[in-house]
Length: 230
Length: 270
Image (cartoon, rainbow over all chains, first blue to last red; front, top):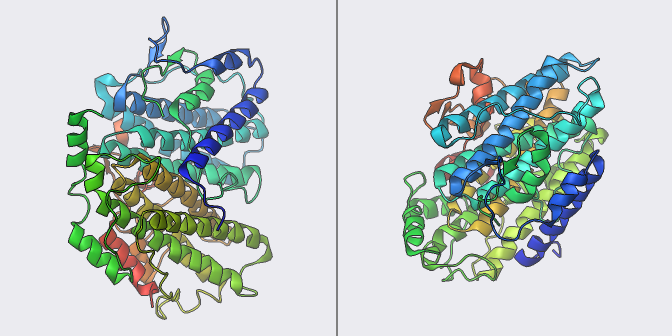
């Protein structure tokens, strides 16, 4: 049973894995200069940059980040169904409709719960890296979003302090994991759990590095400077 | 950590949501597990230990035993299925092997932590995946195998959600339980996808209580899965969006209490 690792080793693996992932993503994105620049980050918490949208602190900041992730997924599937790629099958459409509806539920739940502490709804997206007319482009981004959101929600769960918040985010995360598995299978058969580690676990991602790879899909600048950190 | 935070955390370890200690232990014993005296404090290098956590030791070890219990059952299920010739079609074999590998690793992970904390590591009980005859072809007919597999997978996801909650005071175990929960949700989605591919009208997510796709004892894997009240909001038609009952219930999985888990698992334990 040598696959068992210590917490320390695991933390180390997680760190290197997310760094590797991040570099993969960065390499795949045209005009990655801005992203590379954001790599050197993470000294002390800083005030949000001028004009940036601040997600906030404590559980509220983390739930706002969860809300942002759900806005992203919902908006993506809404767009996919508004401009279906050529050759979208009835089966594929059925899956996209279901996933869109789930993401709308997630998004609206956070919106209602956060109330006056919520970030604005319907933040404008930057879809410049996606060609909605091309199936491969849509599937690749669906895969990226579902993987990122699943890992991000788990990371949020680690930092949340309220039992109610932990519970609702975990209940949502497992459904996004179901989405992720099936999108993976659409991209390539039997890849539903391709990234589980030697402990049979998914690899979660801390909210800061998660935000680093999701902020590019929003036109507005977003700051997680006050969010709790790993 | 500030004193107020510690007190707050301590208060939160007595939620009404899960059973009292005596009940939890009774359930674990019924499932064939001895829960030994727990080492205290719960001293694991690198894990959060504070005064409140020391007093919550019981619930942490019980959570591990509870989750190990489910992972044992799942691991045994796939091991037995893979041992049968001509049961799993060639095209599905790699997926089953992948799932079996993950389950085995999850079992090893929890055993490792029980050992590290000087707790008794329970041995796996013997299983009967026919549910004592109720589903006689589980290990001889692929369709039946998938039916039982998806109940075990969905039930497992739901039990891990309960585990996440039991690890409220311990971030390290909480994130482990989360990462296993989402890995298991991937397994569940794939099994359901496979079942769909052999002609069963179902999706990779749980709609309502699965009344149409599940029979007999294993229906108990889905009690309370049809919840539509989340954070005090009704999710059907939430905020005026066209959200059906099915979509609303699919969108979130529900934790399965230890008491419900016992009812579900008992028929499969010899």
